Each structure stands twice: as structure tokens, then as C-alpha cells.
Length: 234
Ligand SMILES: [Mg+2]
Image (cartoon, rainbow, N blue to C red):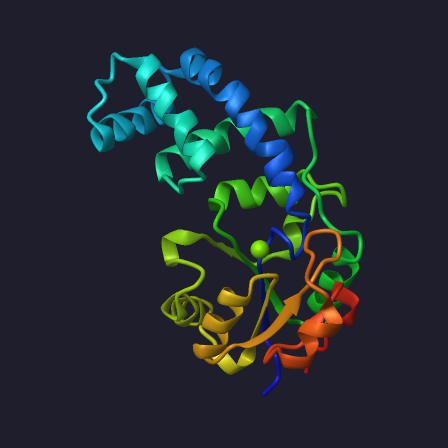
């Protein structure tokens, strides 16, 4: 069956894992508190703070306590929606000011463009919020890439290691799983996608992992590549 849609992960696949750990996370830890204080009266910020307060029992007027909780979630890499919402707003401001650009591997844009010219639809599936994904591809080292993608999925459709998430994505795209190719650097995600009937390809970026692609290739049920131009699409 012809591959009509390609769904890609971000971290370790289209971009380096370091961007999140070395740039976004430290930036949040340093600046989210001040951002929350400065913008607490704004509706979307207030709404997120109310959610944090409801979840944790920390009173809304205890802003110091709420900010401490947010910092703890950042350090623990807890996927709390209210935190992600606030981070999305903070990062948007920083991207717009040109404080940093997201990292995209240079082999990625030309291959995505080629697939788009072949009339394959391109999607993103990442644990980051859809807003953060859109920012990532708007302010990247490879320029504004938003026009390449037809849609974005995040963990609200389900966890990335759960095969049901990939069934739902296929339903949302309105294609049979066999007509979709999923790209990721994570074995658990690839196994889940394959179990749901999707085609898979395993990105092993030498810059991001100590895995040896030659060794992995010998026993992997997923095709293994080290860059986008090696991906075979039927
Ligand atoms: Mg990844």
C-alpha cells in the first residue's frame, strides 16, 4: 500500500534532544516564575494557575508556592498540561525576541519538501504541546517549516508508547494504518506504532545516542536510518 501520510516525532528524530534539555528546560526554570508574576492577570495565565491550584491544593494567592510547584514539575519532567500551557506562552515570547531557535537537523527540510511534492501529507506527533510544536517548527534553525505540516498531535491523543494512540491518529488522519509511516528515535514508540499496523522507521542520530546503528539494524524489526535522506518510502 502506498504511504499517503508520514507522522514524525520531534526530539531525536527531526531535531536534537539537546535543544529541550540544554535550552528550553533551563530557560523555563530561570524565567517561568517572573513570567507568571508579570502576566498573572491575563486570562490564559490565570486559567492555568487556577488549574495548578485545583490539582495541588496550593491556594491561588500563594503564588510563591505555585511557582515552586511549577519548577518542581519542570525538574521532574512531569507532563502537566497547565505547566505546558504556561511554558508555551513563555517560549513564544522568547522565540519572538530571537533569544533562541529550535534545532532541526539539516537533512530534514529537503526530504519533507520532497514528500510533500509527492502529495504525501505530513504530521507531527510529540509529547510537547501542539503550541510548542508549532513554535518549534516556526522558529527553527532551518527556517519557518510550518507550511510543510498538515496537522499536529500531542499527548492529549494518548501516550506515545500506547498502540491505541496510533490507532486514533490513523482515524484522525482518516487513513488505514498501513498507509502511514511513523518516524521516531524511540523503540517503545515504534513498537506501539507497528502493533497498531503503521509502517515504521527508527532514526538513530549519532549526535543524540550511544546506540550503534549497525548493531541495532541486525535485530531491529524496524528499518534503521541515521538521517532523513536514507528513509525509504513506498
Ligand atoms: Mg523522540
